[in-house]
Image: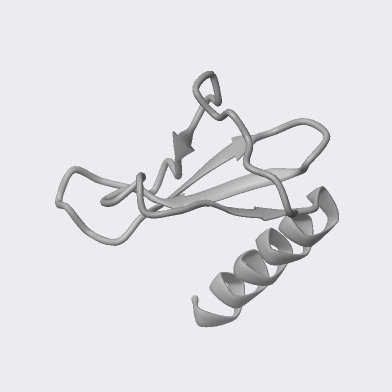
Length: 71
């Protein structure tokens, strides 16, 4: 986006499917105007990917459809 964001008060959340086994997990935060933030829960300080709400919605729909096909 060309500028850094202050994410001190961002409310990050993990998937309800995430367990305490130390596996791969993505955290998500609603960042308001810039969109949705995504980060690695194991290394949250490494960086954040910011996407539009529409892009995040398309990602969630894709994952849900993929999961339904694999059942």
